[in-house]
Image 1 (cartoon, rainbow over the protein chains, first blue to last red):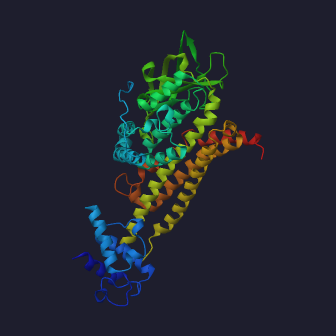
Image 2 (image 1 turned 45 degrees about the vertical axis):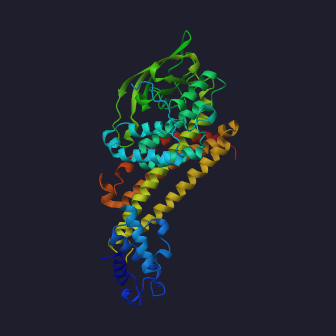
Image 3 (image 1 turned 180 degrees about the vertical axis):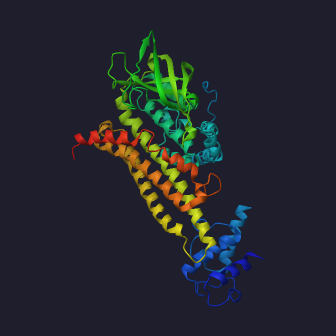
Length: 83
Length: 391
């Protein structure tokens, strides 16, 4: 499963989106799709758990969690740094 | 006994931050082993030598880097976060370096000696306490005994931290056989010119790597190794303020490490129960607030000391002495409180001696802060000071 697929699965469980994550493009605005800032914390925790990573403080911003692509690329960056 | 070091400083050209990170890495790697075996953190101190950190507090004119107290405090905190004992050795060493370098009193031979701290990366220890005087470091029974052009010193010291590892030991003693107990001088003794007969071991709850054993010290050194200035002034203007600022910095670093472990623990708990805020998170809020108070306290007293450092009257003044005494007491209480809170947050994971969320070692180390120069004694001294303080 690619990072994008895992992020979509996490969003379906924790994102409180109005539409399934599969119906969104990678660049659609997740906040516009219904994700609250409270839900984004749960998304962050679940993404950390799914990939066994921890977001450093500098990545804990609204922009990191604004789209499927931004989350996936942050994850990939952290996985590369850990490799 | 450790022989005078033969390592000559090879200039480590890396920026200070990189050198400190390197020493902290090594300190962290050996921290568990140092604690388990109650042994001196030799690897970390060797790393201080090779990176030039042992001479860093000396002014550039004496071959050092002229680091400010704030810079020294920042290093002490980073080392303390990695290994409490290593941090304390760094703090005690530099309090001795500055006690010498700031009180040379125009003596050429003492200036040359101070320069050797940088060029040869010498490690300094201190022998201030003495058996039979009730733990008061401002009082001595032993005395400087003139033997020709040399002086003899015989002192029964219940504690000399890392004494057998030091290249130079700074020893307090009465000025001569007829002097009052409080008429003290500080004598700089080379390891080569003294014998240390161990009188007790160091198997303690925490800070096990400081190897603070008891010794009968017998030194025969050149008479010009007696710092001419009275110890009373050295103590008030340098040794006590620098000790308290750097110790508090080490304890702050230990506290940061405890808070970081607590934070990681709470986040991992949150990942297991997404949607609910784990109980530890609320406690963590209080802990972070406490750490912020601690940061502000240390930063404030460091800056105040820095601004007064060359004003002898202000440094010796009651107002400042009260504040710098209170810094030690308050900081030692804070690190113990942070440790207790970190243990409550991390629970059994923190209580364990192993595992990534263990806070056990630092918890034990933290208990020593209030006892090394007992807070009760410091508070009693401060109480005497405020009786005569005006405003």
